[in-house]
Length: 168
Image (cartoon, rainbow, N blue to C red; front, side, top):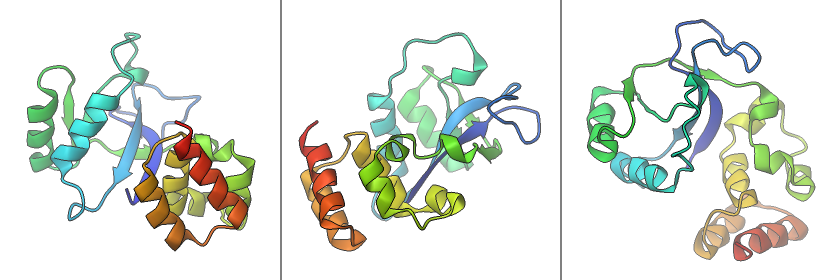
């Protein structure tokens, strides 16, 4: 995963916010390297591991796939079938900074590593995206080892990441 950002999509209003969401849904935008991960695999993995099934009936929490192209829409429909809408070409609006990297923001040890980042750099950072996933308990020992070799974290932060992934 290269980058993750939370935001809003699917509505008709311009520049929604959390306090004025209108008809948008809360969404997660993922940037990935298709040479490393096929879109079909990505959608299948997300779909199988989602926390869905408890529809509130509100558009804000609608389960959907927001595809960026006709090809992505075709693939998404093949994966999710009629269990959720596939919406093509919806504009994505980045959510407010305080909504980004939620798990990471609540880990003081890891946030110290990124203290020099501006809010926008934190949102756009591959390292922050990866650390947010680890802070949420996702990842494998192999991915942690590969990432830690590249990230240049302090020994304390590296040990923290290893504990987070080992403890899940």
